[in-house]
Amino acid sequence: MKHYELLFVLKPTLTEEENKAKFDQVMSILEKNGCEVASVNDMGVRKLAYQIEKFERGHYYVVYFTASPSVIDEILRNLRYTEEVIRFLNLKFESKKELVSWEKMSKANQAKKEEPKAEDKEEAKA
Image 1: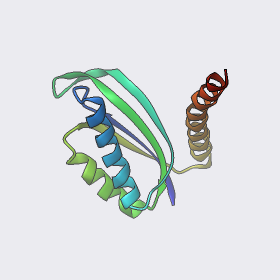
Image 2 (image 1 turned 180 degrees about the vertical axis):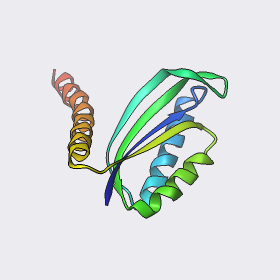
Image 3 (image 1 turned 60 degrees about the vertical axis):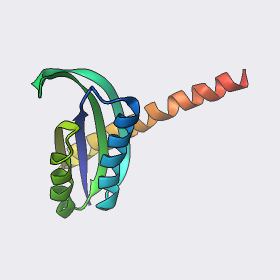
Image 4 (image 1 turned 90 degrees about the vertical axis):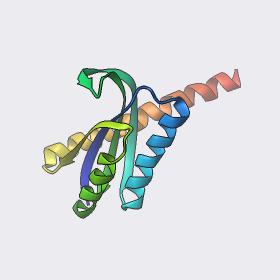
């Protein structure tokens, strides 16, 4: 199993429900192909560096996962045919230094996810 980072950008014109549905579709593609998702970072809507398909903004997601190298082509093929994905980038982490970096980024995303939940529990108690 190799370590990967997948960044994809969804169209900014999608409603929250459509955005969630497309995100779930991408996650199901990963799970269907036997990937183990370590963490997900929803970066929100951001300005693009340049216009893509006449869009100046996009909804960014970063997914850290492990998978067999043989399934990556299938995952990328599915992303290519998903109309709502306007750009994607898949990185493979190989060297020890890169793997340490992957672990650090993955754990940082998990910590970010857990922090708001702890704050919500404190507010509920008050």
